[in-house]
Image (tube, rainbow, N blue to C red; front, side):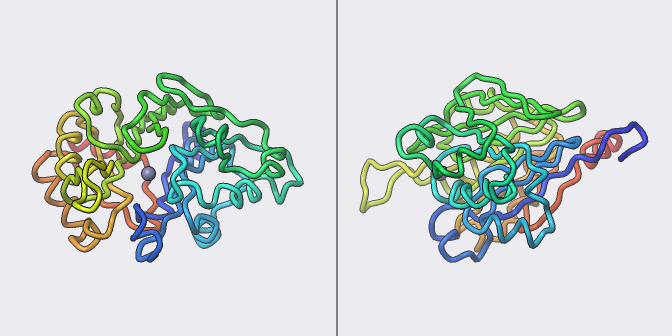
Length: 274
Ligand SMILES: [Zn+2]
């Protein structure tokens, strides 16, 4: 607890790997992101190995108020069942909510029925809606361009606004939907890849480094954190990419590391420096 009676606000990166080849090799972990915001604990996108990372980092799933899934792809949902089991104390306590797009719940549910019964509720994410979890509210401003239904989030706490741009093709209006002191972005590719010769016409719908540069320049957060790296981004050393983006944009850009815990009070420090 701080002097003003508010507890700290931190974000722990349970994994920084994204897309299929990185995830199946586990060169980088793929556990998602854990938000601890003024006493409210939220787990975002529990990919494969989330439970392993959570226990390794000594985080307590019983404290979670919610699990949010941006979209149903495996690297964002593989551990949603085991994390529900953990959040509900092995099913002994009806507790916590799951937020997900309708195609993750209605058509082929990502959550087993017998575990779903232990949740306090399942909330369907829709474009333009606002939701509340404990001391935090968040909006899902726009449906992303991805092969499945997919939403990023803008979280608001008493002190901070955090924008999370999950997987998407870059599109013109994207920056307009996301404003925050902190911008977290899934940057999976080095260069935009529209299609592969083997699959002509098929878009590969992830942000690339030049997209990240454009978005940071337009959104102008106090700090931007890159994560969800594909193989080529990892080979190019994300921390060097972050350094270059800092120089190009004038915004402090950080490449997340597996297990990195970002304290949001750092955002207030950067304000003092300006
Ligand atoms: Zn995806």
